[in-house]
Length: 163
Ligand SMILES: C[S@@+](CC[C@H](N)C(=O)[O-])C[C@H]1O[C@@H](n2cnc3c(N)ncnc32)[C@H](O)[C@@H]1O
Image (cartoon, rainbow, N blue to C red; front, top):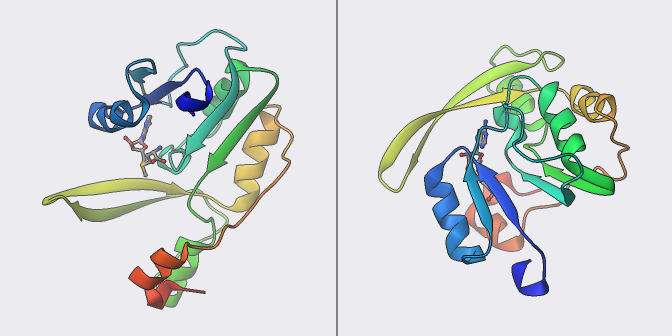
């Protein structure tokens, strides 16, 4: 992005993740520790595009955040967001014989071990209609909902999850 002339600003709750981003983006990017659940510290219409990659599913309340993302976009601006597939976890829980209600917004915790460290991650699963309604309520018009297949290399790593 930066090498093609974009002026990049990034936020994350984790200083460590921002260090990773700094390595990729270089010194010119404006990277700040911030909680996406809080009001964003940017003026109205500050950005042409906002990318929210695999982060919204950590937030319980999808009222304020889409409205804030909409506020900081310039007229005609775009939000490109990716989230965990809304059906995937519910389907997995059903197949495992666990009780779940797809139509509710529900908390899910998972233990992850990476780089020798173990942590409990807390996710908020919600149905597809709750996602689309949160964006339209914030004033977005949805152009595309896509379900990209896994890369072939990912399918080699987890063949049991391939489609
Ligand atoms: C799966 S990682 C995705 C990282 C990066 N966006 C990407 O796509 O490579 C999830 C990220 O969301 C961040 N995160 C989770 N909750 C957040 C919040 N409330 N505010 C800001 N960042 C948050 C975590 O610190 C983590 O870096």
